[in-house]
Length: 385
Image (cartoon, rainbow, N blue to C red; front, side, top):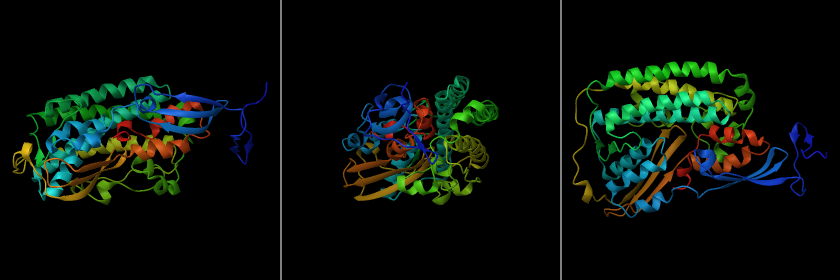
């Protein structure tokens, strides 16, 4: 039988796109997750990818345009949907952009509660992600564990905000309410269980020979690629760069918390997994610090006019925060009316799941393509915003 695999020169596969010895196939769209919310047009040679083109447009979209037709307060149910597993970053940035344009300073206790909200949301998002990463390599047990523990975190959100997924807790001027009585103790019980789970994940997943064989060396990101591709977050920290907006440009009360920037050096899918696994421990530590240091009394909300008739002074601003995927930014323009003139969302998924993925996919076995996609930790609604 004629060999369809490409020749190897200097340790690298050499592909001839003018040859007819390759096939075209489609990966997706199907649900769930990043591996199914978008479609990849692949050229394959044998079982190796030789070319990858991303196609989007299969998901709910048009968030930015929808916001131009709604009053500011009516945009909060929209921004939540831009990142379903981690909606609170969008809530915070939209509210913070409004406050910046209005020149409003929120109360101190509201800053602590917003930070607690963001870190708990980060933990829930990472639990979903690490389950997806394990599942992409056929390790369904870890995925079951992490989704169950994420549900326990969502129980805390439900008790605190009244909602499990879309919390709409952060609002212009502060937050919507205080912590329920006894919530701290229940939160400690939940995060202690997650902490124990992370220890088990280290044994079952990170030290698993099959996982290492498939993840080590997969989709290597070098320091030189970071700025060229707009790589941020754990995808940048996995190749040794110490970049974290919580440290580089502190917001809320992050400058009052003690934590380090977690990094690895290999830049591959395994390193990205390890960085995020470490950052889950980090979020647990930050939640405990916040609950220990947070003021127990004080205002939760600044005084504002009726938000249904709120008009923001003319101007423009850009605010950013560190999401689980890296820099998340909101550019907001006001023309002085009750409606946003323009809102542009800088979601990390746009660069990670399109330009970066298209190049990293070349040479990858099609069986490892889902693992590569999940290792970049992207959420397609950020692309189709």
